[in-house]
Length: 99
Image 1: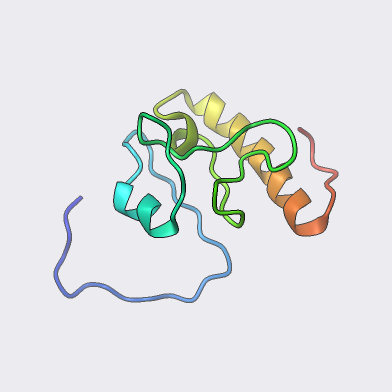
Image 2: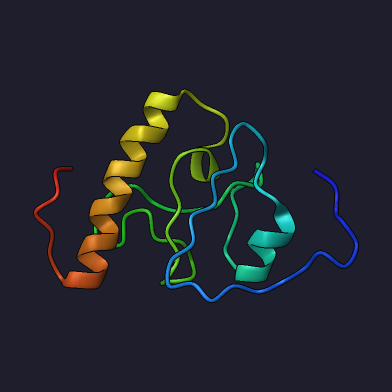
């Protein structure tokens, strides 16, 4: 990736998903959101209990490569589903989504 001068713009959004693939998370993005990182520079977020997949910023959740680093797509799918349940619980107070 390389920056294109004068190409910046803003879009209003209620929800943003960052799909990074097999690269390290962009540290400037993580720093802008003020999330804690693990020693490898990935987003720190627990996977169990209340607040699962929630970052140190309580309105941000992380799963897959952003949280665990480069891994298999099956892990990203599993974490995506589990993270969706945690977001549902955060927003609705409970969830009927499978864990």
